[in-house]
Length: 347
Image (cartoon, rainbow, N blue to C red; front, side):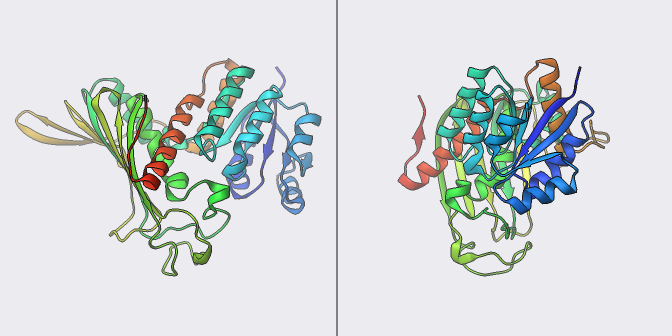
């Protein structure tokens, strides 16, 4: 079989650091073209990575290159239009997270994937991390019993992105929750088996991002800070399950926290670092793993490999469109609840 012909749309830092090298590592892939609205950026990427063709209009690339698949590495605002165009043209699509700038545009992507019969995978890479893979196996084996409470934390003490368009509401759709929180939210929902959402109540705020201060990633433009620096939400899920999520770029806490904590009838589990908490033998026991699966593999590379193998074998990718859509639906509900001061219920 000939190699899959792949193109990249968007040649910013995520493409140059992760997507382009990741696809070039795949033995079944030929990376043949890149596209970016910036002439200088696309020329630089094509030269640096020795990619044969480059375009300033992705639609021209789709029309001329006879591609099998593309990877979408643009800001969030452009995910949906590019993905839908590629799917309708008969291409498979790998798209960076979040799926889209809102749930409506994410739904359009899911509909296009169903309509075309092509694979649409979303870059929720935390699922591929060794701790996440081990946690999924532990839960599948019934070690925790019936899980009824999940706590999700994606918190930085001072980690506001000081580059790109991260603080632009129109282009990104949101701030800390969209950039950082969605990774851990997706992971938590996947570990639970993606139960249906019943109700969402959320609060988002701008307290530290709109004024100058200390930041681990350098100074940012606080005068044009348009998104939330902190978000918190309570999510009721089918089966009587509850999920609490907190995401922040800047918060007065002792140190950064990144974790999913699950509590069940037979035990509990912390994902980062992986630990099982149980009551047994008349004692309270905490167990840690001494060896994890895929401990020497990079999650970025694993997700690209999964996408490629899904195309070659016809199986589903680890992250399915309907699952990524659920994340976008919850995030939309968090923002809507914060705006209205009322919870958002789902039928």
